[in-house]
Length: 227
Image 1 (cartoon, rainbow, N blue to C red):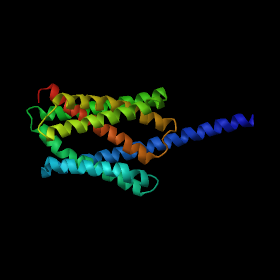
Image 2 (image 1 turned 135 degrees about the vertical axis):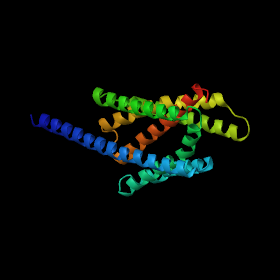
Image 3 (image 1 turned 90 degrees about the vertical axis):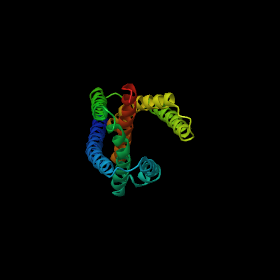
Image 4 (image 1 turned 90 degrees about the horizontal axis):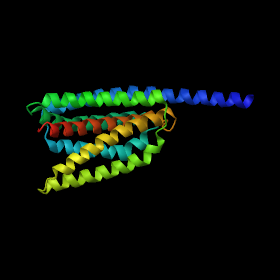
């Protein structure tokens, strides 16, 4: 009897802990998304060049790899999360200005934002309601991201040397869009089932997934609309 009570108590404590992580993650995520949007607006107003976007993206990746994991268990982790989202948001400005200069650019940007928000809410709600574990997707998604990232570097490198590969660039965007959908499911599932107990790391993971999903959809919609 006592053993049963202990099991039930541990289960209740686990659910409560997961709920706290989820609540803190969504709260911090909403703030970083707003901050990122503000930084993107500032970048757009300043009309910064694409080179700045490249520099801020590289800086954000450096923070993701070397700073965020080391500060995730302290208050400095929150600062690093805002630094990452701010840099990526600022680097998004030149991209948005480019698309907004197209004949139907405003529609493309709004459509990408709308689809991204709908997909995130839909996938998160499915993970929360179904309570399914998506841990089996982890290794597949990581391998897929590595392949897509490598293909993206090849595409960018080819363009820089005067050999653009639009087909490969389109394929990379499609791969990232699908992979980010899987990442949102997997990351949310990890939070729900206690696989991720650090809300700072959870926030960064979901933010990067949303960011990549948005930029990938923007590229895909731009191509399909002949822009």
